[in-house]
Image 1 (spheres, rainbow, N blue to C red):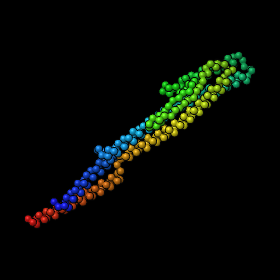
Image 2 (tube, rainbow, N blue to C red; image 1 turned 90 degrees about the horizontal axis):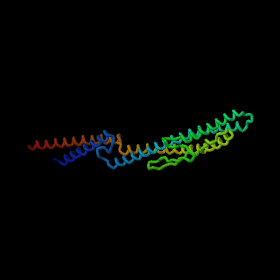
Image 3 (tube, rainbow, N blue to C red; image 1 turned 30 degrees about the vertical axis):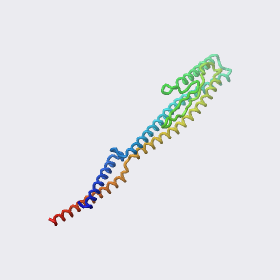
Image 4 (cartoon, one colour; image 1 turned 180 degrees about the vertical axis):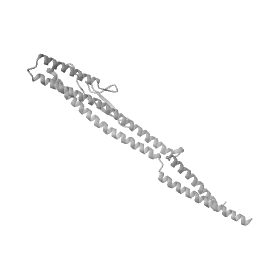
Length: 256
């Protein structure tokens, strides 16, 4: 076997190996399939884990948003009741023509409303966790892939069920309205902060997921070009081998 034949055979074998590798990458869509590129596969796994963690953080933010919105809805209802208390107080204090029956009716409404406000405060929960109270409600929500949290508060609404007379309704209503306004401010700030952190978490999750895939994905254009090149080289090498063999046979025939 001549040197040219040996080189042609070697070229064919190397091209065949590369052809099989390209076919594997194209068919699986991954450059790391079959135990190849373990380092890139490890990187891809790490990035995917980070992506999953960021997605979990986004879900945490979503749940916290839901909780704050429950508190916000309750506070808006309390605000309406507080407005009615102020109205009752004004009617009582600015009207000397009220009968005993009128006053009794207004007292009854006052007592019902103040009891309802207390009931709304104590009954506002999310997943059995109190969202409103007579003391400040504070909770944390995880918003990063590494366990970072944001602290949220829903304010304070004082108990007013002891107010049963229309003569005190105006004062009680004004006090509750002030507390509701402050609480809504805290909740609004929490909602805006959570939305921003949720957007960051969703974006980070998407970026990490894309990076995880791209780390091991096959570049189809480049790999197809590489496959075509190696197929041509293999064909040329086989042709050279065939030609070299034909030359050797010709020489042998001449000698014999």
